Amino acid sequence: MNRTATLRRNALFALFLLPGLGMSSWVTRTPDVRDMLGASTAEMGLVLFGLSVGSMAGVLSSGLLVARYGARPVVTAGTFGVALGLLLIACGAAMSQSVVVASGLCLFGLGMGGGEIALNVEGADIERLLGRPIMPLLHGFFSLGTVVGAVVGLVLTAIGFSVVIHLLAAGAVTLLVLAAAVRYVPAGVGKQERTARAGGTGGRKPAVWKDVRLLLIGGVVLAMAFAEGAANDWLPLVMVDGHGFDPALGSGIFAVFAASMTLGRFTGGYFLQRFGRVAVMRAGAAAGGLGLALVIFADNQFLAGAAVVLWGLGASLGFPVALSAAGDSGENSAARVSLVATAGYVAFLVGPPLLGVLGEYFGLRNALIPVLACVAAALLLAPSVAPRSKTAERAPA
Image (cartoon, rainbow, N blue to C red; front, side):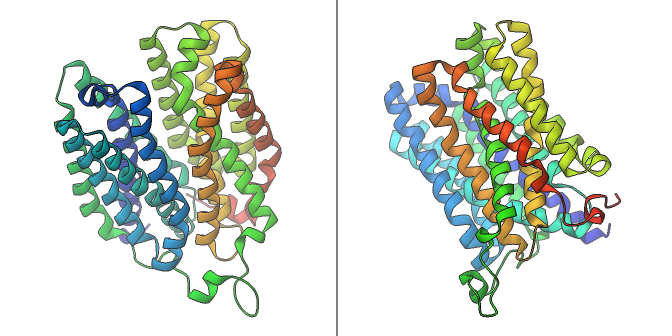
C-alpha cells in the first residue's frame, strides 16, 4: 500500500469514529440535559424529534449532494454539522432553552445523516483501490467511537462532571480531528456529470434503482440495519421490562452488544477474505437470528443476556458487507453505494420507532419478532452480495 492510500485510509478511520463518539457523548448525557431543561417526558420527546428530522433530511439529501459535488465536501459539511450541533446542544442546555437544544439536535442529525452516506461512498472507493475488504473495519471505528464515547460519558456522569463542558469538548475534538483528517480525502469521488445524474438512455448511464440485484442488496442492508437499530434504541428496555433486569444491568448488556458489534467489525475482514461475502452474510444472519430468537422467546435471564453477543456479532457485518457488494455490483459505483446506504439509514431511523408502537400493544419482546423475520429474509437474500467475480472476493491482503 502506498503512503497516499495509507493516509487516506487512516483519515477515513478517524472520520468514521467521530459520529459514533459524538452520538454516544450526547446519549449518555441525555438525562442530565433533560434535568437542566426541566422538561417533561412529552417535552423531551419533542426535543428529540429534532434529531429525527435532521437525520432524515440528511439521509435523503446526501446522495444527491454527493452526485453533484462529490463526497469530500459532503463529509466536511456533515462532520462540521455534527460538531456545531454538539456545541449548540451544550449552549441550549446551559441556557435551559429547549428550542436551542432541539435545533442543535437537528443540526447534529443533519450532519450525521448526510456525512455518513458520503463516508460510505468514500469507503467503498478506497476498498476498491486497495483490493481488499476494509468496510467492516471502517464501520468498526464508528462502533469503537460509540464505545469510547459511552465509557467517557458514563464516567463523567458518575463524577458529576459538567454536561456543558463535556459536550463543548466533544464538539471541539470533532472539529480538530476533521481539520487534520479531511485534507487526505481526495476531491471528486462520487461526483457525476449532469447527464449521468439525470439517468435514462440515449448514451446516459441507466438509473441504478432499476437494477434488480442492487435492490436485493438494498433489502439485505435494510434488514440488517433494522436489527442493529432495534438494539441501539430498545435493547436496554427489552432487558429491563422484558426480562426483569435492573436498569444498570440493562445498560451493561447494551454495552456488551456494542462491544460485540465492534469485535465483529474489526475481525470481519479476515473472515471475508477466507470465506467470502455470501458465507459471512449467511453466518451473520443465522447468528443474529439465533440471538434475537433467544432474546424474544427464552425465559432465562442468563440465556437472554448471553444471546446479545450473537445478536451483536451477527448484525455487525450486514451493513458494511452489503455496501461493499453495492460498490462492485455494476457501473456508477458511488450512486449504487449511496442508494443502498440510504436504505440502511432509513431503516435505522424509521424501524425502531415502529417497534415502540408494536411494543405498546404486544410487549417489547414480541415487538422484536418482525426484526427476526427481517433477519431471516436477509439470510435468504445473502447470495445477492456475491462479488461480480471470484477474484474480487478473494483479493489478497
